[in-house]
Length: 66
Image (cartoon, rainbow, N blue to C red; front, side, top):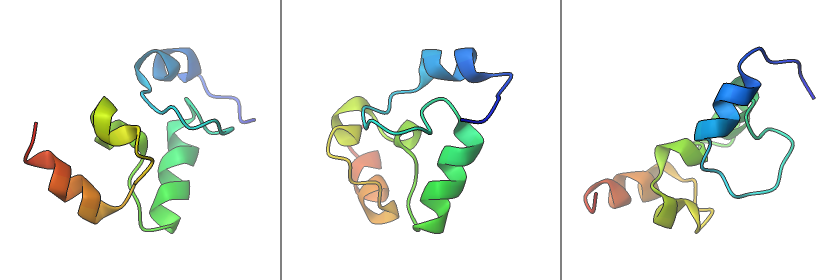
């Protein structure tokens, strides 16, 4: 795990429910999802996040229901 000076602050607002080692490590999380052509959980509301669908298409689809 990477030392992150903002880890505690990041964890307080991270809505990701997927168990992985990148929770609260925003730089690593964004880089990981970007490599996959996805968005991280923080782009989604809690209902959409729970689907674990991180696609850009799903994000655009869910934006209309906020």
